[in-house]
Image (cartoon, rainbow, N blue to C red):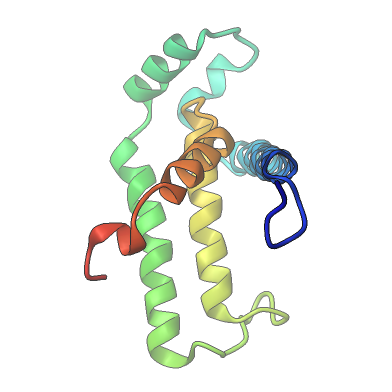
Length: 149
């Protein structure tokens, strides 16, 4: 049976799966590059004596949790969201002073994403796979997830 796009449901499902794979791969690549840069810039100095050690997923997460201030990492994410709010309050279309091709609002949102991906990588989490899983789940939810806003 063909849908309104002239595709079979199976073809549509396969296309969606390819899209999800691209999203996951893109996030995973970005997460790795972002975290590598953050390590080089000193944001993970608590773990510098642990480079090269082969960890299991659980060992790494527990070791990072012991050595890294999770609240500080979350506060850095929150600070970028607050900066985006201030950019929106000031002038949402104002160019960013460091990346003038983009608005300050866009750059602050990008900073928040960068901090999220870095934090996930630092704890050994695969945010690319998590984003795709959450997108798939959200597709099953009602409009506005059943809330007013």
